[in-house]
Amino acid sequence: MPRESHEAKTQRAQKIIVALAATYPDAHCELNFSTPLELLIATILSAQCTDKQVNLVTANLFRKYRDAAGYAAADPAAFAEDIRRIGLFRNKAKNIQACCRKLVERHGGGVPRMMEQLIELDGVGRKTANVVLGNAFGINHGVVVDTHVTRLSQRLGLTRETTPEKIELALQKLIPQPQWTLFSHWLIWHGRRRCAARSPDCAHCEIAPLCPSAGKI
Image 1: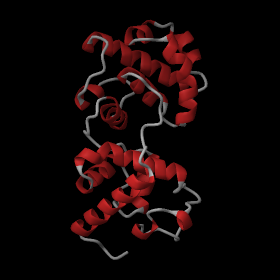
Image 2: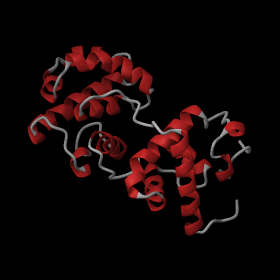
Image 3: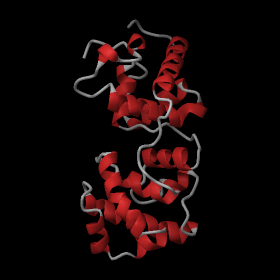
Image 4: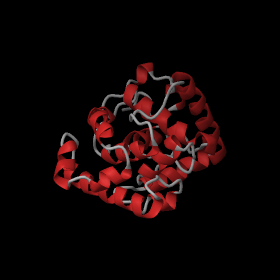
């Protein structure tokens, strides 16, 4: 594809949004949760782990621990055993308990609604904070950039950046803010269902006409 102007890329991005919205009208966060705290815990657990595996573990975890104080007060060895089926479980167990101690000490056990406060919590980076803000509170503070969003935003020619921080900034310039959270879901769903890392299904892709990489991978 010839070098695009920002205006042309923005217009193409809008067409991609329309197509993905029509293809995945029910797109949503696929981590199971019923409270902001549950989503925070699930998102910390999801690093380098599938949502399916996280949901299997949290089904029991969320019944056992009802609030931040419960996580903070849990026996460390017992809590680590509770999430043993998750990759990097020991480190995640430490982060979750430290995170929940800060929630109790600094926020009365609640999950803050500000990026600056969220990223001060153990195990919480910008991606996790964006997941919580967008899906638990409906706050479009940023764009969640995971492996799917990284891969698809590059394949679609929306950015040439390679770091999550720069990819997010590039997408924020193309995507209307009210759609930041949903845009991540649309790309994630498309990445899981159509545009796989090794064998993208370009022949049946709903946005192939808008993708400079279609048929070239």
